[in-house]
Image (cartoon, rainbow, N blue to C red):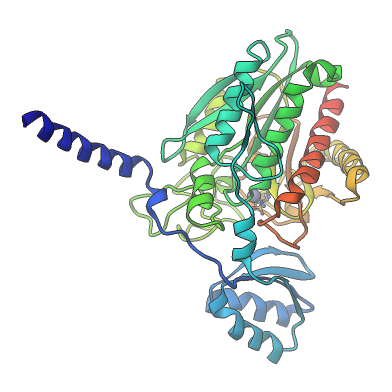
Amino acid sequence: MAQSTLSVIFLIFNCFLFIESVPTTLETPVRYDGAQLWNVSLSDEQTRKIVFDLENEFDVSFWRTSNAAADMFLKKSVIESARQILNENNIEYSVRVEDMQKHIERESRQPYRDGQQNYGLTWDAYYSLNDILLFLDNLVEKYPNLCSLETIGYSHENRPLKVLKISNGKSGNKAIWIDGGIHAREWISPASVTYIVNDLVENWNNQPAYIQNVNWYVLPVHNPDGYEYTRNTNRMWRKNRSKGSNSKCFGVDLNRNFGFKWGGKGVSHDSCSEIYAGSGPFSEPESTAVADFFANNTENFEAFLTFHSYGQWILYPWGYDNGIPTDDAEELDLAGREASENMKALDGQVYTVGNSADLLYPAAGASDDYGKSIGIKYSYTIELRDTGRYGFILPPEFILPTAKEAHTFVHTIARIVAK
Ligand code: 0X9
Ligand code: ZN
């Protein structure tokens, strides 16, 4: 009797533990039935004002804006009112995605298992964090002399931040950092980074010297809490999942939380904003873990490559403000353009190269500037596919061609680093 009471108490206690450690899975998933992606022309100042005012009036968000047009995401409930305003003002727009929920449902699938030791991702679907971590574990198991894993820290919700090291162990090797998934909804980023890792490792013996004589450090999912949140609860989530005691809303934009020029242009101090910089530089465990990793590492890092989506851009520092080129901007531009040409040769896709603030917008506290600030020469943000047809909800059939472009980018930079 006493024992069964004890086990009931134990069970209840465990339940609470479970609730504590996996908070996101209990929320009802947000649905996007009838939500649409529009491309709106921005012909003049007045048009820009009318269009951007929609964000204050209705539940719309701007995924991308350029001088000429804006990609605007609209929940179903606001479509009619937004349509009316644009029509009344003769503002041209086209509907890119008719029903976002349908696209979201096409995205997820279980990984392929062949029943033996292999644990394969197949890059025709997007995978859970767990599947990605199992894939990394499996590489270490299969190739213990080449691969090792280091947990560089834990996310706000206690998920491990796992960095895969790939190295032939030669002294004098240079080092290259690659990360993906700092922004939760940019699923093509971890998908492409795992593809790169797989190619490096599985084809190691056939790799050129400029790949083999590098110590590779790869963090495929920089923001694991956000990533899981986009899979289980809200596909459009961007930030991490922390909440300060004085904050109204959840989440810090990790790409505004790094300690270099923190809090400058292109950030928000409102916790509800998509670009909330956090309560201070490195206030978040996910960004701190990366900074600690570099602080405690004595490797000779030559490249810092951080993968995002979307827009097809190859961006280099400084990105915290406009018109501030680095001393070696020409070299970074040249290397970026060489990569872009090689990427275009694959499938005809154009990746535009330039300074991140001038080409896109200024954003202070981003990881690319941090990488550059600690002396890593070839620091790039790569915005993968597409250019606004599907935006963040890139259908799975584009994973492989995009991942191959990312892979070619990495090869090009590695070749240049070796010179
Ligand atoms: O805004 C960002 O963080 C990046 N774009 S995204 O749509 N993937 O969110 C661009 C960051 C570029 N780097 C800097 N401006 N420093
Ligand atoms: Zn991003």
